[in-house]
Image (tube, rainbow, N blue to C red; front, side):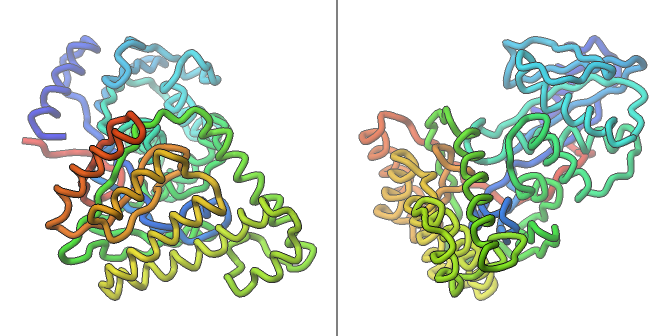
Amino acid sequence: MKNEHIVKMMTKFKELMNRQDNPRVFYSPGRVNLIGEHIDYNGGLVFPAAINIGTYGFVGKRNDQKVRLFSNNYPMNGLMLIDLRHLEFNKNHGWANYVKGILDEIIQRGYVINHGFDLLIEGNLPTASGLSSSASLELLVAYIANELFDLKMTRTELATLSQTVENGYMGMHCGIMDQLIIAQGVQGKALLMNTATLEVEAVDASFAGYQFVIMNTNYQRKTTDSKYNERVAECGEALKLIHQEKSINYLCELNPKDLDIVRTSIKDDVIYKRAKHVITEQARTIAAKQAMMDRDPIRFAELLNQSHQSLKEDYAVTGLHLDTLVEEAITHGAIGARVTGAGFGGCAIALVQDDMVTSMKEQVKRNYKDKTGLEADFYQVSFDAGVREVKSWS
């Protein structure tokens, strides 16, 4: 968000909330996962980066137990009023349930929230795109509460709290990746994350002469949550069957050499394919980190392509729109591309030579429209720091 827009939003906050004081300004990024998909709930290593599009919050303290909320992205919902003493889920409250869930979880954990606040939200992340707009909002609210009420939670604690809300309050059985990268992001870096131990390692995330381009299908996913939860359950079934042959806590403790054991344990072809993806994706993520450290874009691109193929054939989370974007990108200049995020629509990421970016986007946009009837959007992002307070915009 440009500085002049921040000033404009501060003015809107004062007018909307009928206040004279300037709000505090907070920012929570979105994220793109470079590789390591659908393995964060399997104890795997993932390789995401925070990005420089996200969610802004303009906040002012109140002296009562009320929280007033307004989103510039959902103006039709109007100014919403919630009470800190009544934070139960209400499907009619839409996006505000993320705010309520975070506050409820903080209170359930014994922290004191002794007054309300006014909050104006504006985000420039496309919703349902696979760039973690929901996790961005969760971490924004958690970080704001941590600062307003001096809760002294660490960034890792804010991430795990937000994941708990996503899993329990919102009913989406995601892993920790989205919340942890948004909490811990480092400018210019991707973070290799161990989702079993929550350890992170920052790695320079660039290749000279190449750019990462995010491509949005703009396909409105209708069954993502149920299909995602279905994949989680299928991995749980695979783990249970493997336990008959081998004692492990997570599927990602296995490596491709163990696939014979997996095949012996799992007779169902679908469940086997889910486990195969998880195990091979873990190996690809480790190799991708090495390729990035070696400054080897060709090897990194090969791994992107292999990841997409596995997500298509073994994990079945791509579909016409994502497959079309990826295939067209590779045909017209990308050296590697794959779905990023949960799949079933949303976004893909491509690695493209600098001098090919413009023509690649033009040709992919035209051919994608011809094949799907939809307009694709493209974002050239930089990798950003994690959730924070914005203290300078002049």
